[in-house]
Length: 100
Image (cartoon, rainbow, N blue to C red; front, top):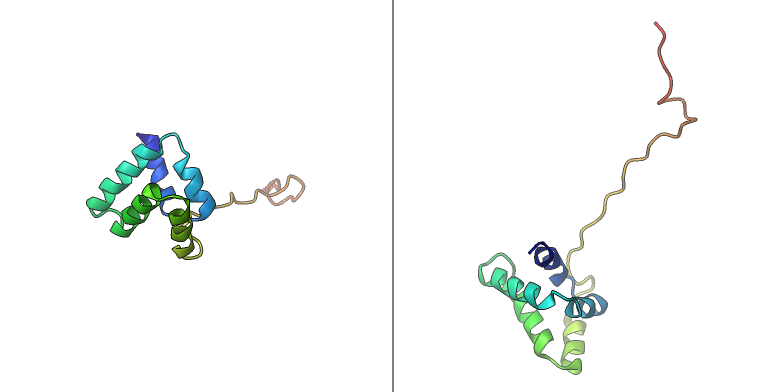
């Protein structure tokens, strides 16, 4: 179930490479069915389920046409945050002790 949940954000990214890799995923069909249920329940846009249904049912020409209709970026992507830099051992700021 966790794997199916983890697939859900990938349905929003509809670039050529991302869509093809997602279709080839072992749990794609379970994730797709769950995404359609989410769209029916109003948790995701209905257009998303319609697009993926046409993509899954379509041949290579239909898929290519659908991919050209997707706006650049294909959907929101989560940005990864960088870990804060740790001061180097020789900086002295972290190693100074106050004698009092």
